[in-house]
Structure formats: C-alpha cells, structure tokens
Length: 242
Image (cartoon, rainbow, N blue to C red):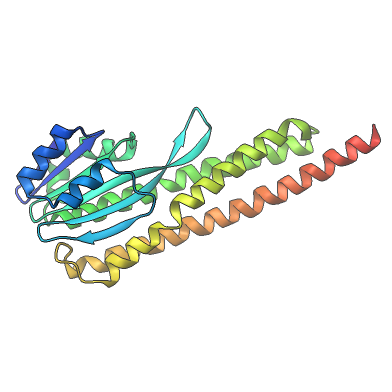
C-alpha cells in the first residue's frame, strides 16, 4: 500500500491488495462492505455507486500484453472519500505508477494536482490515462503501415497472421473503451456528493477525449478490414496462378 499526502487529502494506491491492505483502508475510511467486496471481485463493466461515506467507481484501461501481443482491459477500482482518493488494481498501470511517483517526489506537483479535492485529482488521473491511449493508437497505425507495405511487397502469406493479431488488438481496444463513456456521462450529468459541481465541465471534456479515441479506433478498424480484403484477394490470385 502506497500513500502520498498533501495539505488537503491523501492518495492511496493499492496494487494487488491483500486482505490486510483492504482491512486497513476499510477501518480508516469507514468504507461500506459492498465497496470492500468490490476490491476482490472483478468487474466486467464500468460503474459508479455512491454510499454514505464514499463514492465507488470502476473503469477499465487498455493495457498491452507483450506475451499475447494484444490489448487487454485493466480494471481500476476507485474510491472517493472526503479526505482521500483510493485506487486499486491487480495489473501494472505504468502511467498511473509514474504519476504517483511524480507526486511523491515533487512538492510542486503535489501543490498543483492535490490542492483542491480527491475528485479533482481523479480528473487529472483519468485525463492522463485516456490521453495515454493515443500513443497506443499510433503504434497500431504504424503496424498497419507496415502491413500495407509488406502486402504490396509480395509478402501476403506472411501478413495473414499479422493482420489477425492486429484485428484482435483493435477489437479488444474497442471493447475496453466503448463502455467507459457511460461512467463519464454519469459523473458529468448526475449530482454526487463527493464530486464538486464545478468539476463537471472537466468530466464532460473527458467524454470528448473518449469520443476522439473511439473515432480513431473506428478508422483503424476500417483500415485493417480493407487491408485484410486486399491481402486475401492478392493471395487468392497468387494461388490461382500456381
């Protein structure tokens, strides 16, 4: 369990939390038993729930698995109380860890990002995590450029597997990102005690970021499908000529 503090509140980050970690935060912040249960239960869909002492959120971040060579959803559990932001995750989220370490080291950055409230810090975290999707999308676009070049260089057979892997990557990315908009819309539209009304505009802006990511995914989906059709056509012609 890691913690960084400012004059206003604390940020506690739990990576692969065990029963002792959860018990400590439960007692310290008087968390509802249903919230405690969420720390140990995988959540397939994003959600937002409010309780007497806290607000609970679940979001999913696209994480690239180097072994399977595809994007997979990484669950991030979030609890907002009056004087703390608690994040919990079983998988490594590098951007989150880097941001946490920056705040831990730099008093200046703590003063900037942790001067208002836990919900304001959450806004910065979500913005950082969503913006981190764009370099991943750029990487997919570079793979598509490579596939296109290889197809027209006569390597159609070798590209069949590469196209399949890229299609799976895009599909998993889309599955991860699409449901997140419902949580952002809920925060932006509903009244929550632990999220200040003046922050709603920022969460509305995050919806716009989500839409930009989705539009990029739509473009890559259309591109890979076109490349697959072209590759299949060229491969079929080669087979007919042999």
